[in-house]
Image 1 (cartoon, rainbow, N blue to C red):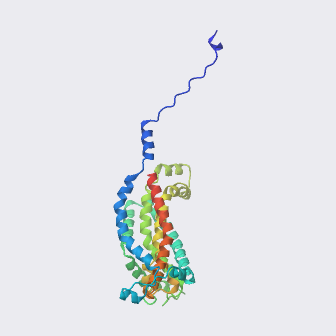
Image 2 (image 1 turned 180 degrees about the vertical axis):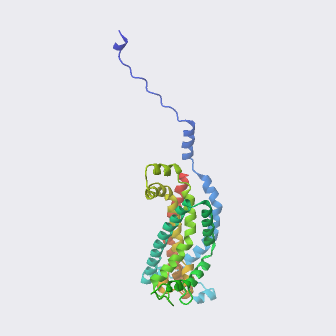
Image 3 (image 1 turned 180 degrees about the horizontal axis):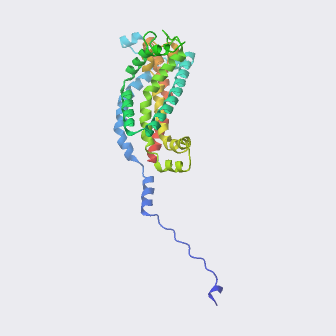
Length: 326
């Protein structure tokens, strides 16, 4: 019998190999609970709880009471009113107009800030190192200016009698901007407020996004250049996907900051914002300390915190996801 006539025998199946040592270590790390980050975060959580727990708890209790000025001076316990304050607020049309105004301002200002901040960050990559350093130093000065000071600067610039903006526009032939009040029309007034907020927010966004741009792999850009991709295609298909986690983070932070707008409106309207310029923060302050309706103001603040919790939860989730990727 020749060898070709013998029945074919199947080769023995390879025995299952044991996982390598690095694989076993990685699997063990995945099963092991990650206690170290939580332990390291405990001091910060304790400090934050100590600083924020009492005011938040006091505000929550006050929102279920009817505290008046006489209770504040006498020290007497205000009567409990249950959910009456929340019922009054949620059935008030003025409150919902303030919520809508605050939300619209937040969306518009954050969108403009992100677009301009990304534009400045991209510009910083195209200029020389000396110009880039000058841009960073200039933006750091803008960033360091307190909100109240920058609001006063803008207030002087748009002053109806002595504002430099009115003077410059008035120099245009055929245009009469003498003694023009920018805040007589709420649309123009909110343009001024939005410009101030965007101007103050661009330095943080531009510097942060520029730091993110330095992490975009250069070989990907060179490959796109070799393939003949345009600048817009490179931005859309390579840069923006890489920057997406960072853009989500700075957008969420900007939403949190701009939703609580207070100082700029308060300073530009001389501590007496009209109804058309009320935001949630100024509305709560006006109700609490302008009308001595402290419990009503507390209830508005609690609702504002609840509205912001969703955004803050999204921000924390993004931070943990970035940590897992790293």
